[in-house]
Image (cartoon, rainbow, N blue to C red; front, side, top):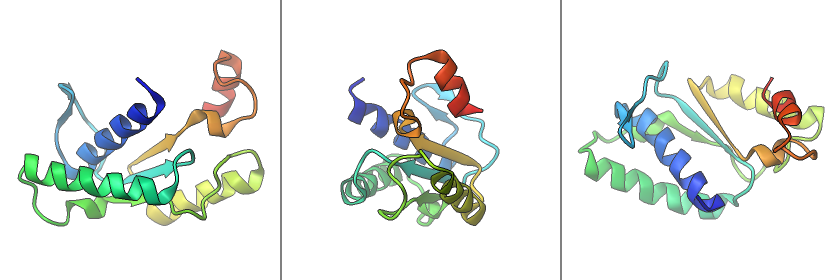
Length: 129
């Protein structure tokens, strides 16, 4: 998957969760709830917002969803840090999670969470702990 396609796929999965659609790409979804927080640090807010609106409209039509399901979707705005390098950056993520109280948090992308090569398993394990 090209980078942009991976982000779109994970957003679509998150929207399936928010809408209560029980599966994604043929796989069952069993989230603890429908509130989804998207934390996108790679893509600019305006571009992502336009795409998300199209995704919401498409899912609403395709699955005959009731209006209002999209209220389960929360997206950080352009003021959110684009990298997670400092304690202050991590604190802004913690504050956003506390504010939204999501059941699922989607972080895009792991490469924005460390200056070290994320492909190194020891680096990846430090980021995910």
